[in-house]
Image 1 (cartoon, rainbow, N blue to C red):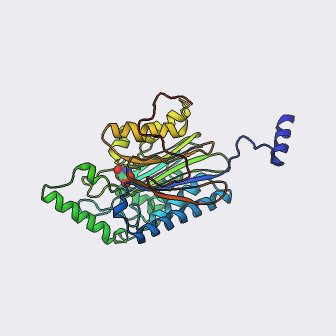
Image 2 (cartoon, helix red, strand yellow):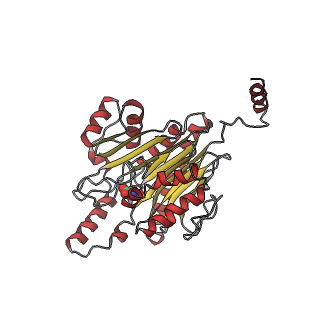
Image 3 (tube, protein in one colour):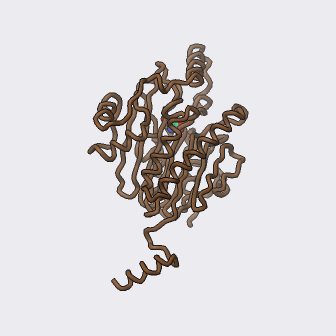
Length: 348
Ligand code: ASP
């Protein structure tokens, strides 16, 4: 008891930090698969501004002493509202010309999680996923039922036309034309156009959270659901690690990518950067998939690996300065990426 008081007193003086206290960190992505030659200066500027705003809004929550879940929800809401990303407004279209949105959130401190899939009218699917986590006894709700639940808990619903952007509509028309001509690009080509958004955060209590929101894949059909709302595949957090993925969802599901990264970190004690690189840069490409992820551990280490040309990404930590990057050859300040052939057997 005396010892505890002593530690608390020393901590109050700022000499040591209590074991549960942490310096807040927020990491975000706005999707992998960016192609430099397809980016206009205007779009690049808009994307960088949106990523910066998402970092600022999410970090403000952390600075105010709010939880990692609050920060993740705040950052993702900004990106869902911005039409430049494939989540919320600006989501890709299904084969049938609709928008079907998926999202998930997980609180690493409690292992509670909430997710939604195939919603058409929920303005901010991440807020509905959070409501599923906090206000229902379930983890995952889909389609009409999810929207019934949204109504019952006061989550904002919009006309489905709200999500439409001309650019996404044209992307669908292009894919449909290619379908019709049987001259469709290979799946890998089609799968390049991601844009999903995600966030992971560490709050001042040392708690982690992860969240992801997406319109899924352009031209998807038959009620296809990707990895983003699947806990463990595109989204996962525990007490030591938080991950949000973006990429060709089928491969993230088959590798249970987000959970796999976190298990390597918390059970096998593999350093975060190496664990994420093993799954994103080795395991997924070796099966034919592609994409990226953001990951954060309870020591505040950040990593943002991807095996595509670029990934919209950013992070903000103790100095409160947002760091934003898009391309693969751009320094994002989170350390050099590990080479794709990193030694998977390496120990810390
Ligand atoms: N992972 C998402 C999905 O497969 C797509 C993306 O990240 O852009 O639905």
